[in-house]
Length: 169
Image: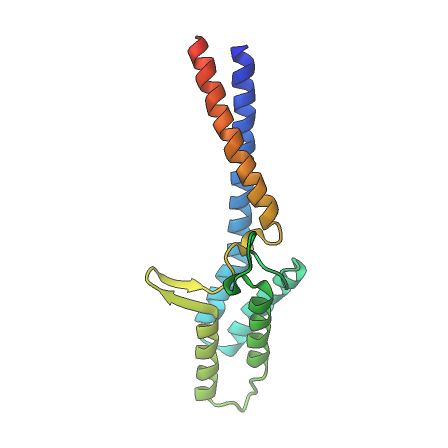
């Protein structure tokens, strides 16, 4: 019986590890494809570099259908509005693309400063890219939330099973 308890406990722990790994993978890949590129666009010294990064991000967002909805699970708050975030990014890209060769250097600098103010927030811990909370899991936030709750329960059961099996020895 103790071998069965250990086996089930290990399975429950593996399910928890898979959940953690999946969330971590989504977080890392989203950071590479969106967060880091938005930061590069904010740091761009030329309009062309900013357009290049913004084009990539907008294409990725549209390809993954991250254009509308809320990342929240229980209630909707403005900081979790994916549609506003997406439309704001598109508007910024359109502003960049309006720049003509005759545009003065001062106007270009002002456009790049405005882009930086749109893309990043200055907080106590440094500069953070502005985006909805939980966007790396969107549109599966509810599924990951339920999976997480189930995993916590399974992890508690695994600990109980391990303790019970240990006490049998």
